[in-house]
Length: 553
Image 1: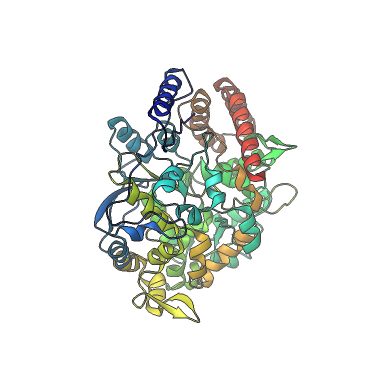
Image 2: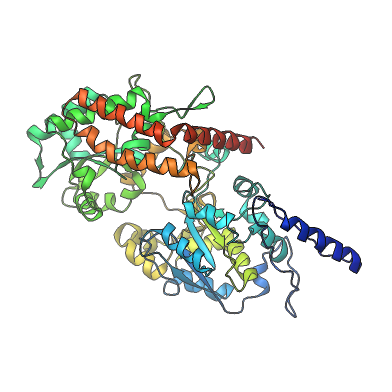
Protein backbone atom coordinates (compact mmCIF):
# COMPACT_ATOMS: atom_id res chain seq x y z
CA UNK A 1 0.00 0.00 0.00
CA UNK A 2 1.33 3.43 -0.90
CA UNK A 3 0.52 6.51 1.11
CA UNK A 4 0.99 10.10 -0.10
CA UNK A 5 2.43 12.36 2.57
CA UNK A 6 1.75 16.03 1.91
CA UNK A 7 3.52 18.31 4.34
CA UNK A 8 2.16 21.74 4.99
CA UNK A 9 4.59 24.57 5.27
CA UNK A 10 5.22 28.07 4.13
CA UNK A 11 5.13 27.89 0.36
CA UNK A 12 3.90 29.96 -2.53
CA UNK A 13 0.42 29.26 -3.87
CA UNK A 14 1.82 27.87 -7.09
CA UNK A 15 3.91 25.28 -5.26
CA UNK A 16 0.94 24.15 -3.24
CA UNK A 17 -1.20 23.83 -6.37
CA UNK A 18 1.57 21.87 -8.06
CA UNK A 19 1.82 19.49 -5.12
CA UNK A 20 -1.94 18.94 -5.09
CA UNK A 21 -1.96 18.34 -8.82
CA UNK A 22 0.79 15.76 -8.53
CA UNK A 23 -1.06 14.04 -5.71
CA UNK A 24 -4.24 13.94 -7.78
CA UNK A 25 -2.35 12.38 -10.68
CA UNK A 26 -0.87 9.81 -8.40
CA UNK A 27 -4.31 8.91 -7.04
CA UNK A 28 -5.68 8.42 -10.53
CA UNK A 29 -3.11 5.79 -11.35
CA UNK A 30 -4.05 2.12 -10.70
CA UNK A 31 -1.86 1.61 -7.66
CA UNK A 32 -2.14 -1.14 -5.06
CA UNK A 33 -4.74 0.63 -2.92
CA UNK A 34 -6.19 3.97 -1.99
CA UNK A 35 -3.81 6.15 0.01
CA UNK A 36 -4.58 6.46 3.70
CA UNK A 37 -6.04 9.75 4.81
CA UNK A 38 -3.83 11.50 7.30
CA UNK A 39 -5.42 13.25 10.27
CA UNK A 40 -6.37 16.79 9.40
CA UNK A 41 -3.87 19.36 10.53
CA UNK A 42 -5.10 21.35 13.48
CA UNK A 43 -3.91 23.92 15.92
CA UNK A 44 -4.09 23.41 19.67
CA UNK A 45 -7.25 24.79 21.32
CA UNK A 46 -6.96 28.26 22.81
CA UNK A 47 -4.84 28.16 25.92
CA UNK A 48 -3.45 24.69 25.16
CA UNK A 49 0.30 24.36 24.69
CA UNK A 50 1.75 22.43 21.79
CA UNK A 51 2.57 18.77 22.60
CA UNK A 52 6.02 18.17 24.07
CA UNK A 53 7.79 14.94 23.02
CA UNK A 54 9.14 14.65 26.56
CA UNK A 55 5.79 15.06 28.32
CA UNK A 56 2.51 13.09 28.04
CA UNK A 57 0.01 15.25 26.17
CA UNK A 58 -3.10 13.93 27.95
CA UNK A 59 -2.40 16.51 30.67
CA UNK A 60 -3.05 19.32 28.18
CA UNK A 61 -6.78 18.56 28.12
CA UNK A 62 -8.63 16.65 30.83
CA UNK A 63 -12.11 17.89 29.96
CA UNK A 64 -14.81 15.19 29.89
CA UNK A 65 -14.92 13.08 26.73
CA UNK A 66 -16.34 9.64 25.97
CA UNK A 67 -14.62 7.01 23.85
CA UNK A 68 -16.32 3.79 22.78
CA UNK A 69 -14.03 0.77 23.02
CA UNK A 70 -14.74 -2.52 21.29
CA UNK A 71 -13.10 -5.52 22.96
CA UNK A 72 -13.11 -8.48 20.57
CA UNK A 73 -13.86 -11.17 23.13
CA UNK A 74 -17.46 -12.27 23.66
CA UNK A 75 -16.56 -13.60 27.12
CA UNK A 76 -15.27 -10.23 28.39
CA UNK A 77 -17.78 -9.18 31.03
CA UNK A 78 -16.31 -6.11 32.73
CA UNK A 79 -17.77 -2.62 32.74
CA UNK A 80 -16.15 0.81 32.97
CA UNK A 81 -17.16 3.41 35.51
CA UNK A 82 -18.21 1.08 38.32
CA UNK A 83 -14.81 -0.06 39.58
CA UNK A 84 -12.34 2.01 41.58
CA UNK A 85 -9.58 1.83 38.96
CA UNK A 86 -11.78 2.88 36.03
CA UNK A 87 -13.31 5.76 38.02
CA UNK A 88 -9.83 6.90 39.02
CA UNK A 89 -8.57 6.88 35.43
CA UNK A 90 -11.62 8.82 34.24
CA UNK A 91 -11.24 11.41 37.00
CA UNK A 92 -7.57 11.87 36.12
CA UNK A 93 -7.76 11.97 32.32
CA UNK A 94 -11.33 13.09 31.69
CA UNK A 95 -11.85 10.05 29.44
CA UNK A 96 -14.92 7.94 30.10
CA UNK A 97 -14.95 4.61 28.30
CA UNK A 98 -17.99 2.85 26.91
CA UNK A 99 -16.98 -0.80 26.58
CA UNK A 100 -18.55 -2.93 23.84
CA UNK A 101 -18.19 -6.67 23.26
CA UNK A 102 -19.52 -8.87 20.46
CA UNK A 103 -22.43 -11.17 21.19
CA UNK A 104 -20.85 -13.76 18.93
CA UNK A 105 -17.80 -14.00 16.70
CA UNK A 106 -15.67 -10.83 16.84
CA UNK A 107 -14.59 -11.01 13.19
CA UNK A 108 -18.16 -11.07 11.93
CA UNK A 109 -19.16 -8.25 14.25
CA UNK A 110 -16.39 -5.89 13.13
CA UNK A 111 -16.84 -6.84 9.47
CA UNK A 112 -20.49 -5.75 9.66
CA UNK A 113 -19.41 -2.51 11.31
CA UNK A 114 -16.89 -1.88 8.54
CA UNK A 115 -19.66 -2.34 5.98
CA UNK A 116 -21.84 0.19 7.80
CA UNK A 117 -18.97 2.68 7.94
CA UNK A 118 -19.47 3.28 11.67
CA UNK A 119 -16.88 1.78 13.98
CA UNK A 120 -16.18 2.17 17.70
CA UNK A 121 -13.52 4.75 18.57
CA UNK A 122 -11.05 2.19 19.92
CA UNK A 123 -10.88 -1.41 18.70
CA UNK A 124 -9.06 -4.28 20.39
CA UNK A 125 -8.88 -7.51 18.38
CA UNK A 126 -6.86 -10.71 18.49
CA UNK A 127 -3.63 -10.19 16.55
CA UNK A 128 -4.47 -13.32 14.52
CA UNK A 129 -7.95 -12.22 13.46
CA UNK A 130 -8.80 -11.69 9.78
CA UNK A 131 -10.54 -8.42 10.60
CA UNK A 132 -7.31 -6.80 11.77
CA UNK A 133 -5.79 -6.82 8.30
CA UNK A 134 -9.09 -5.68 6.81
CA UNK A 135 -9.16 -2.71 9.16
CA UNK A 136 -5.62 -1.74 8.19
CA UNK A 137 -5.85 -2.32 4.46
CA UNK A 138 -9.36 -0.91 4.15
CA UNK A 139 -8.29 2.46 5.59
CA UNK A 140 -10.67 2.13 8.55
CA UNK A 141 -8.13 2.99 11.25
CA UNK A 142 -5.54 5.70 11.75
CA UNK A 143 -1.82 5.20 11.47
CA UNK A 144 -0.81 5.58 15.10
CA UNK A 145 2.56 7.06 14.20
CA UNK A 146 0.86 9.85 12.23
CA UNK A 147 -1.56 10.65 15.06
CA UNK A 148 1.31 10.64 17.52
CA UNK A 149 3.44 12.96 15.41
CA UNK A 150 0.62 15.48 15.34
CA UNK A 151 -1.01 15.17 18.76
CA UNK A 152 1.26 13.32 21.18
CA UNK A 153 4.89 12.56 20.24
CA UNK A 154 5.36 11.18 23.77
CA UNK A 155 3.68 8.06 22.36
CA UNK A 156 6.97 7.04 20.75
CA UNK A 157 8.68 6.96 24.14
CA UNK A 158 6.16 4.60 25.74
CA UNK A 159 5.03 2.43 22.84
CA UNK A 160 8.50 1.02 22.27
CA UNK A 161 10.36 1.16 18.98
CA UNK A 162 10.64 -2.62 18.84
CA UNK A 163 6.87 -3.07 18.94
CA UNK A 164 6.22 -0.27 16.45
CA UNK A 165 8.83 -1.72 14.11
CA UNK A 166 7.37 -5.23 14.39
CA UNK A 167 3.90 -4.04 13.40
CA UNK A 168 5.11 -1.54 10.81
CA UNK A 169 3.54 -2.15 7.41
CA UNK A 170 5.15 -1.82 3.98
CA UNK A 171 3.96 1.80 3.76
CA UNK A 172 5.95 2.65 6.89
CA UNK A 173 2.90 3.05 9.15
CA UNK A 174 1.88 1.21 12.31
CA UNK A 175 -1.85 0.80 12.90
CA UNK A 176 -2.04 -1.20 16.11
CA UNK A 177 -0.24 -1.55 19.42
CA UNK A 178 -0.25 -5.02 21.05
CA UNK A 179 -0.69 -6.12 24.63
CA UNK A 180 1.35 -8.95 26.17
CA UNK A 181 4.14 -8.52 23.62
CA UNK A 182 7.48 -10.14 24.44
CA UNK A 183 10.77 -9.86 22.58
CA UNK A 184 13.22 -12.80 22.60
CA UNK A 185 15.88 -10.53 24.12
CA UNK A 186 13.59 -9.62 26.99
CA UNK A 187 12.75 -13.26 27.66
CA UNK A 188 16.41 -14.26 27.67
CA UNK A 189 17.26 -11.39 30.04
CA UNK A 190 14.43 -11.83 32.53
CA UNK A 191 13.51 -15.50 32.33
CA UNK A 192 9.89 -14.42 31.90
CA UNK A 193 8.82 -16.31 28.81
CA UNK A 194 5.02 -15.99 29.01
CA UNK A 195 4.86 -19.68 28.10
CA UNK A 196 1.54 -21.08 29.27
CA UNK A 197 1.31 -24.49 27.59
CA UNK A 198 1.58 -27.38 30.03
CA UNK A 199 0.64 -31.03 30.42
CA UNK A 200 -1.34 -31.30 33.66
CA UNK A 201 -2.41 -34.19 35.86
CA UNK A 202 -4.54 -34.38 38.98
CA UNK A 203 -1.91 -34.55 41.73
CA UNK A 204 -3.43 -37.01 44.22
CA UNK A 205 -4.60 -39.46 41.56
CA UNK A 206 -1.33 -39.30 39.64
CA UNK A 207 0.76 -39.93 42.76
CA UNK A 208 -1.50 -42.73 44.02
CA UNK A 209 -1.01 -44.42 40.66
CA UNK A 210 2.75 -44.31 41.27
CA UNK A 211 3.53 -41.25 39.13
CA UNK A 212 3.40 -43.21 35.85
CA UNK A 213 5.56 -42.26 32.87
CA UNK A 214 3.27 -40.49 30.42
CA UNK A 215 6.00 -39.51 27.96
CA UNK A 216 5.95 -42.66 25.81
CA UNK A 217 3.02 -44.23 23.97
CA UNK A 218 3.41 -47.40 26.05
CA UNK A 219 3.45 -45.54 29.36
CA UNK A 220 0.55 -43.35 28.29
CA UNK A 221 -1.60 -46.35 27.39
CA UNK A 222 -0.61 -48.24 30.57
CA UNK A 223 -1.66 -45.28 32.72
CA UNK A 224 -5.01 -45.06 30.95
CA UNK A 225 -5.53 -48.79 31.45
CA UNK A 226 -4.77 -48.45 35.17
CA UNK A 227 -7.19 -45.54 35.37
CA UNK A 228 -9.94 -47.63 33.78
CA UNK A 229 -9.27 -50.69 35.92
CA UNK A 230 -8.88 -49.02 39.34
CA UNK A 231 -9.74 -45.34 39.28
CA UNK A 232 -12.68 -44.74 36.95
CA UNK A 233 -14.32 -43.35 40.07
CA UNK A 234 -12.07 -41.54 42.52
CA UNK A 235 -13.16 -40.05 45.83
CA UNK A 236 -16.78 -40.23 44.75
CA UNK A 237 -16.28 -38.67 41.33
CA UNK A 238 -16.40 -40.11 37.84
CA UNK A 239 -13.05 -39.35 36.23
CA UNK A 240 -12.67 -38.39 32.57
CA UNK A 241 -9.33 -39.66 31.28
CA UNK A 242 -8.25 -36.74 29.11
CA UNK A 243 -8.91 -33.18 27.98
CA UNK A 244 -7.31 -31.17 25.16
CA UNK A 245 -7.83 -27.40 25.22
CA UNK A 246 -9.22 -26.00 22.00
CA UNK A 247 -9.91 -29.48 20.72
CA UNK A 248 -8.59 -30.29 17.22
CA UNK A 249 -7.41 -26.86 15.97
CA UNK A 250 -5.26 -26.18 19.02
CA UNK A 251 -4.86 -28.84 21.70
CA UNK A 252 -4.59 -31.85 19.42
CA UNK A 253 -2.60 -30.11 16.71
CA UNK A 254 -0.04 -27.34 17.35
CA UNK A 255 -0.14 -27.78 21.15
CA UNK A 256 0.52 -31.54 20.96
CA UNK A 257 3.17 -30.89 18.30
CA UNK A 258 4.93 -28.49 20.68
CA UNK A 259 4.89 -31.12 23.44
CA UNK A 260 6.54 -33.46 20.94
CA UNK A 261 9.11 -30.79 19.98
CA UNK A 262 8.10 -31.14 16.33
CA UNK A 263 10.30 -28.65 14.43
CA UNK A 264 8.88 -25.59 12.72
CA UNK A 265 11.55 -25.50 10.03
CA UNK A 266 14.39 -27.63 8.72
CA UNK A 267 17.43 -26.11 7.04
CA UNK A 268 15.62 -22.79 6.70
CA UNK A 269 12.51 -24.29 5.11
CA UNK A 270 9.11 -24.33 6.80
CA UNK A 271 8.32 -27.85 8.00
CA UNK A 272 5.05 -29.72 7.44
CA UNK A 273 4.34 -30.50 11.10
CA UNK A 274 1.13 -32.49 10.56
CA UNK A 275 3.06 -35.01 8.45
CA UNK A 276 5.73 -35.52 11.14
CA UNK A 277 6.32 -39.21 12.00
CA UNK A 278 6.31 -38.68 15.79
CA UNK A 279 3.09 -36.70 15.62
CA UNK A 280 1.42 -39.39 13.52
CA UNK A 281 2.68 -42.04 15.95
CA UNK A 282 0.98 -40.25 18.84
CA UNK A 283 -2.27 -39.79 16.92
CA UNK A 284 -2.20 -43.55 16.42
CA UNK A 285 -1.65 -43.92 20.17
CA UNK A 286 -4.87 -42.01 20.78
CA UNK A 287 -6.59 -44.27 18.26
CA UNK A 288 -5.39 -47.33 20.14
CA UNK A 289 -6.60 -45.85 23.42
CA UNK A 290 -10.03 -45.26 21.92
CA UNK A 291 -10.15 -48.80 20.45
CA UNK A 292 -9.39 -50.27 23.89
CA UNK A 293 -12.06 -48.19 25.56
CA UNK A 294 -9.50 -46.15 27.49
CA UNK A 295 -10.64 -42.85 25.97
CA UNK A 296 -14.12 -41.70 25.14
CA UNK A 297 -15.05 -38.94 22.76
CA UNK A 298 -16.07 -36.46 25.45
CA UNK A 299 -12.86 -34.48 25.01
CA UNK A 300 -13.87 -33.88 21.38
CA UNK A 301 -17.51 -32.99 22.02
CA UNK A 302 -17.84 -31.52 25.53
CA UNK A 303 -19.40 -28.06 25.68
CA UNK A 304 -17.73 -25.17 27.49
CA UNK A 305 -20.19 -25.64 30.36
CA UNK A 306 -19.30 -29.33 30.69
CA UNK A 307 -15.58 -28.57 30.57
CA UNK A 308 -15.93 -25.92 33.26
CA UNK A 309 -17.95 -28.25 35.51
CA UNK A 310 -15.42 -31.07 35.18
CA UNK A 311 -12.48 -28.74 35.71
CA UNK A 312 -13.94 -27.07 38.79
CA UNK A 313 -14.56 -30.49 40.33
CA UNK A 314 -11.18 -32.00 39.31
CA UNK A 315 -12.85 -34.65 37.17
CA UNK A 316 -10.12 -34.82 34.52
CA UNK A 317 -7.07 -37.05 35.00
CA UNK A 318 -4.81 -35.58 32.29
CA UNK A 319 -5.08 -32.28 30.46
CA UNK A 320 -3.29 -30.60 27.58
CA UNK A 321 -4.08 -27.17 28.94
CA UNK A 322 -2.66 -23.68 29.40
CA UNK A 323 -1.74 -23.21 33.04
CA UNK A 324 -3.08 -19.66 33.28
CA UNK A 325 -6.53 -21.04 32.58
CA UNK A 326 -6.18 -22.90 35.90
CA UNK A 327 -4.99 -19.87 37.90
CA UNK A 328 -8.37 -19.39 39.55
CA UNK A 329 -9.36 -23.06 39.83
CA UNK A 330 -6.17 -24.56 41.26
CA UNK A 331 -6.14 -22.50 44.49
CA UNK A 332 -9.82 -23.36 45.05
CA UNK A 333 -9.09 -27.06 44.60
CA UNK A 334 -6.12 -26.76 46.95
CA UNK A 335 -8.41 -25.23 49.57
CA UNK A 336 -11.14 -27.85 49.12
CA UNK A 337 -11.91 -30.96 51.17
CA UNK A 338 -9.45 -32.80 48.90
CA UNK A 339 -6.52 -30.35 48.89
CA UNK A 340 -4.33 -32.58 46.71
CA UNK A 341 -6.97 -32.69 43.98
CA UNK A 342 -5.34 -29.68 42.31
CA UNK A 343 -3.30 -30.05 39.11
CA UNK A 344 0.45 -30.17 38.59
CA UNK A 345 2.54 -29.94 35.44
CA UNK A 346 4.49 -33.07 34.45
CA UNK A 347 6.23 -34.39 31.36
CA UNK A 348 3.57 -35.43 28.88
CA UNK A 349 3.94 -37.00 25.43
CA UNK A 350 7.46 -36.77 24.04
CA UNK A 351 8.98 -37.63 20.68
CA UNK A 352 10.83 -40.88 19.98
CA UNK A 353 14.14 -39.28 21.02
CA UNK A 354 12.77 -38.29 24.41
CA UNK A 355 13.34 -34.57 23.80
CA UNK A 356 11.81 -32.08 26.22
CA UNK A 357 8.83 -30.13 25.00
CA UNK A 358 9.39 -26.94 23.01
CA UNK A 359 6.53 -24.76 24.16
CA UNK A 360 5.46 -21.52 22.56
CA UNK A 361 6.65 -18.50 24.55
CA UNK A 362 5.29 -15.00 24.27
CA UNK A 363 6.15 -13.22 21.05
CA UNK A 364 6.29 -9.81 19.45
CA UNK A 365 2.76 -10.23 18.06
CA UNK A 366 1.40 -10.20 21.58
CA UNK A 367 -2.16 -11.29 22.23
CA UNK A 368 -4.47 -8.53 21.01
CA UNK A 369 -3.85 -5.28 19.16
CA UNK A 370 -5.57 -1.97 19.86
CA UNK A 371 -6.39 0.51 17.09
CA UNK A 372 -8.04 3.92 16.69
CA UNK A 373 -10.82 3.99 14.11
CA UNK A 374 -11.46 6.82 11.72
CA UNK A 375 -14.97 7.10 13.13
CA UNK A 376 -13.58 8.73 16.28
CA UNK A 377 -14.63 12.36 16.76
CA UNK A 378 -11.64 13.22 18.94
CA UNK A 379 -8.58 11.50 17.48
CA UNK A 380 -6.28 13.68 19.59
CA UNK A 381 -7.89 12.46 22.83
CA UNK A 382 -7.82 8.88 21.60
CA UNK A 383 -4.08 8.80 20.84
CA UNK A 384 -3.32 10.65 24.07
CA UNK A 385 -5.39 8.15 26.04
CA UNK A 386 -3.53 5.23 24.46
CA UNK A 387 -0.24 6.96 25.24
CA UNK A 388 -1.30 7.34 28.87
CA UNK A 389 -2.36 3.69 29.11
CA UNK A 390 0.90 2.53 27.55
CA UNK A 391 2.99 4.60 29.98
CA UNK A 392 4.20 3.34 33.35
CA UNK A 393 1.77 5.73 35.05
CA UNK A 394 -1.22 4.39 33.14
CA UNK A 395 -0.14 0.79 33.60
CA UNK A 396 0.14 1.38 37.35
CA UNK A 397 -3.23 3.14 37.59
CA UNK A 398 -5.10 0.30 35.87
CA UNK A 399 -3.12 -2.58 37.37
CA UNK A 400 -2.75 -1.37 40.95
CA UNK A 401 -5.55 1.17 41.27
CA UNK A 402 -5.35 4.20 43.54
CA UNK A 403 -2.52 4.75 45.98
CA UNK A 404 -3.63 4.50 49.58
CA UNK A 405 -6.76 2.54 48.73
CA UNK A 406 -5.53 -0.54 46.89
CA UNK A 407 -1.75 -0.14 46.99
CA UNK A 408 0.99 1.55 48.94
CA UNK A 409 4.74 2.03 48.76
CA UNK A 410 6.93 -0.55 50.47
CA UNK A 411 10.68 0.12 50.25
CA UNK A 412 9.91 2.67 47.52
CA UNK A 413 8.15 0.02 45.45
CA UNK A 414 4.40 -0.06 44.73
CA UNK A 415 2.76 -3.03 46.40
CA UNK A 416 -0.82 -4.22 46.61
CA UNK A 417 -2.35 -4.03 50.06
CA UNK A 418 -2.76 -7.30 51.93
CA UNK A 419 -6.55 -7.31 51.64
CA UNK A 420 -6.27 -6.97 47.85
CA UNK A 421 -3.78 -9.85 47.67
CA UNK A 422 -6.16 -11.98 49.70
CA UNK A 423 -9.00 -11.27 47.27
CA UNK A 424 -6.91 -12.68 44.41
CA UNK A 425 -7.29 -16.18 45.83
CA UNK A 426 -10.57 -15.82 47.74
CA UNK A 427 -12.85 -13.56 45.68
CA UNK A 428 -11.41 -12.62 42.29
CA UNK A 429 -14.87 -11.53 41.10
CA UNK A 430 -15.05 -8.87 43.83
CA UNK A 431 -11.50 -7.76 43.05
CA UNK A 432 -12.41 -7.18 39.42
CA UNK A 433 -15.91 -5.75 39.82
CA UNK A 434 -15.38 -3.42 42.79
CA UNK A 435 -11.74 -2.51 42.34
CA UNK A 436 -11.01 -3.24 38.66
CA UNK A 437 -7.33 -3.88 39.32
CA UNK A 438 -4.82 -6.54 38.29
CA UNK A 439 -5.89 -8.00 34.93
CA UNK A 440 -9.41 -6.57 34.72
CA UNK A 441 -8.60 -4.13 31.91
CA UNK A 442 -5.90 -6.00 30.00
CA UNK A 443 -6.34 -4.36 26.59
CA UNK A 444 -3.08 -2.37 26.81
CA UNK A 445 -1.30 -4.60 29.34
CA UNK A 446 2.51 -4.49 29.17
CA UNK A 447 3.99 -7.43 31.10
CA UNK A 448 7.43 -5.83 31.21
CA UNK A 449 5.98 -3.09 33.41
CA UNK A 450 3.24 -4.76 35.43
CA UNK A 451 4.97 -8.03 36.30
CA UNK A 452 7.20 -6.15 38.74
CA UNK A 453 4.09 -5.39 40.79
CA UNK A 454 2.51 -8.82 40.77
CA UNK A 455 2.32 -10.45 44.19
CA UNK A 456 4.06 -13.79 44.65
CA UNK A 457 1.97 -16.52 43.08
CA UNK A 458 0.53 -19.33 45.16
CA UNK A 459 2.70 -22.50 45.04
CA UNK A 460 -0.02 -24.41 43.15
CA UNK A 461 0.18 -21.81 40.37
CA UNK A 462 3.91 -21.20 40.45
CA UNK A 463 4.66 -24.92 39.94
CA UNK A 464 2.82 -24.87 36.61
CA UNK A 465 4.33 -21.55 35.53
CA UNK A 466 7.88 -22.63 36.38
CA UNK A 467 7.42 -25.86 34.45
CA UNK A 468 6.24 -23.98 31.36
CA UNK A 469 9.09 -21.44 31.59
CA UNK A 470 11.62 -24.28 31.86
CA UNK A 471 10.37 -25.91 28.65
CA UNK A 472 9.71 -22.72 26.70
CA UNK A 473 11.44 -22.46 23.34
CA UNK A 474 12.19 -18.76 23.62
CA UNK A 475 13.10 -18.21 19.99
CA UNK A 476 10.05 -20.02 18.60
CA UNK A 477 7.65 -17.11 18.99
CA UNK A 478 8.57 -16.10 15.46
CA UNK A 479 6.71 -19.16 14.15
CA UNK A 480 3.39 -18.29 15.75
CA UNK A 481 0.79 -17.05 13.30
CA UNK A 482 2.47 -17.88 10.00
CA UNK A 483 -0.78 -19.02 8.44
CA UNK A 484 -2.54 -16.80 5.87
CA UNK A 485 -5.57 -14.81 6.97
CA UNK A 486 -8.20 -12.83 5.13
CA UNK A 487 -9.99 -13.39 1.83
CA UNK A 488 -7.05 -14.10 -0.48
CA UNK A 489 -6.91 -17.34 -2.45
CA UNK A 490 -4.20 -18.75 -0.20
CA UNK A 491 -6.17 -17.80 2.93
CA UNK A 492 -9.28 -19.52 1.56
CA UNK A 493 -7.18 -22.58 0.75
CA UNK A 494 -5.85 -22.69 4.32
CA UNK A 495 -9.35 -22.22 5.75
CA UNK A 496 -10.61 -25.22 3.76
CA UNK A 497 -7.64 -27.33 4.85
CA UNK A 498 -8.10 -26.38 8.51
CA UNK A 499 -11.81 -27.10 8.43
CA UNK A 500 -11.23 -30.48 6.82
CA UNK A 501 -8.58 -31.35 9.43
CA UNK A 502 -11.09 -30.65 12.20
CA UNK A 503 -13.45 -33.13 10.54
CA UNK A 504 -10.76 -35.73 9.89
CA UNK A 505 -9.17 -35.84 13.37
CA UNK A 506 -12.16 -37.56 15.08
CA UNK A 507 -12.25 -40.06 12.19
CA UNK A 508 -8.58 -40.86 12.77
CA UNK A 509 -9.05 -41.40 16.51
CA UNK A 510 -12.12 -43.57 15.99
CA UNK A 511 -10.67 -45.56 13.06
CA UNK A 512 -11.28 -49.31 13.53
CA UNK A 513 -7.62 -50.24 12.99
CA UNK A 514 -4.29 -48.82 11.91
CA UNK A 515 -4.90 -49.62 8.25
CA UNK A 516 -8.11 -47.59 8.35
CA UNK A 517 -6.18 -44.75 10.05
CA UNK A 518 -3.58 -44.75 7.26
CA UNK A 519 -6.26 -44.68 4.59
CA UNK A 520 -8.08 -41.75 6.20
CA UNK A 521 -4.83 -39.83 6.67
CA UNK A 522 -3.63 -40.39 3.10
CA UNK A 523 -7.02 -39.29 1.80
CA UNK A 524 -6.71 -36.09 3.83
CA UNK A 525 -3.24 -35.38 2.43
CA UNK A 526 -4.60 -35.82 -1.09
CA UNK A 527 -7.47 -33.41 -0.48
CA UNK A 528 -5.09 -30.98 1.20
CA UNK A 529 -2.93 -30.90 -1.91
CA UNK A 530 -5.97 -30.27 -4.06
CA UNK A 531 -7.02 -27.35 -1.88
CA UNK A 532 -3.67 -25.65 -2.54
CA UNK A 533 -1.37 -26.65 0.32
CA UNK A 534 1.71 -25.81 -1.74
CA UNK A 535 0.55 -22.18 -1.87
CA UNK A 536 0.07 -22.20 1.90
CA UNK A 537 3.62 -23.44 2.40
CA UNK A 538 4.94 -20.76 0.05
CA UNK A 539 3.05 -18.12 2.02
CA UNK A 540 4.43 -19.41 5.33
CA UNK A 541 7.96 -19.36 3.95
CA UNK A 542 7.61 -15.80 2.71
CA UNK A 543 6.15 -14.70 6.04
CA UNK A 544 8.89 -16.44 8.02
CA UNK A 545 11.63 -14.89 5.88
CA UNK A 546 10.06 -11.45 6.39
CA UNK A 547 9.90 -11.95 10.16
CA UNK A 548 13.52 -13.02 10.30
CA UNK A 549 14.47 -9.89 8.38
CA UNK A 550 12.52 -7.72 10.85
CA UNK A 551 14.21 -9.35 13.82
CA UNK A 552 17.59 -8.71 12.21
CA UNK A 553 16.96 -4.97 11.75
